[in-house]
Image (cartoon, rainbow, N blue to C red; front, side):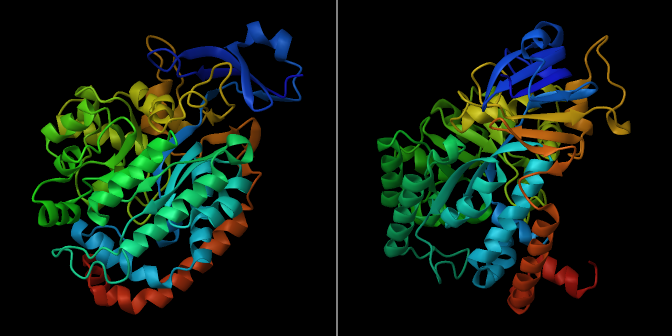
Length: 478
């Protein structure tokens, strides 16, 4: 018996070289797997009497989005870190909140971020943060979202960063503790809830730990057949630290110690030369670009198109954090990525809409090591898909001749509220914009309360840090 049958839609399968469009298409699901994809007329006789039937007439049906690099716990600090120089962002707009943010606050922030992700079509989240175990138990598992979780490993403790222009102070005991916690997370949660939750290692960044610890984490990951997800060349602050400590740049330092290969997922990579991007591509490093976040924090367009032009193995995009990006919405991220890279290269043909959709689905899944199970609509893959309404003013008209305009309209016109239905691992998680696995009103209310608690407690420290944003507030500009 077929469990779910989606019919009459514009099905973007993401198979082949492009979006793999099937007009008047259908998808049949049994359990948590896709069993058939094709024309509605060809599949309806065998699968049409399913337990649940979704009529997708006037809708796009496509794989759920993969948000490959995320820190959702920061969602309660949305709007607290924008419009400041990069060297201020971590130490003057993020750090003041840290002493006042409890694990409970982080859980409320993550719930809000996950809610936003699902409601805008993301079905797989690459979450990186501290102490992921309680968040996995209380948010990721019950929400129904697919997640790849990592505890960050670094040697940064209280007092490690008194001045961005002086070498950070490393604490070996902090690194040992965080490595143990990361291993515990993997031992407990990798493959949990029927495989919907997976884990990997995440050495934080080259400027936040010794080379010995960095290589040790990679060796531990490789011994388990896992990849490592690391922030690389993520701005002027990191560049200063790497130069102070090693007299070189991040990419050249990592390459020099033999760290770079196809088991590494490198996020950001915008503080690089073109030649260094070529080194990443040549070494087979996988790349996650966070264009909206880095555009706001650094004023730089990350080298997504360049990486691909230089033969990069695989690339994904991520929304990063809401106190940097301001949102966790992959439809927004696709548009920003396309526009910024077009202007960076002064070439409107760079990263066309069909390519951005692939990067947000199948190629994103491949980048984080899940391409064999998700990212496209084909038999044998996990049933992670979304239904997106095309019959709204800003998505109209829907045309197939002389060329199909569905992919461009999704990337350049969609906002996120067009996503009506979300199916993850064969279960309906959202239907007709009603999320079934989370209490939307409660999540928003609790996140608001948590944000007020943290921000009220941190107000004096935040204002004393005297960031550009604090100066704007004093002048009454906000």
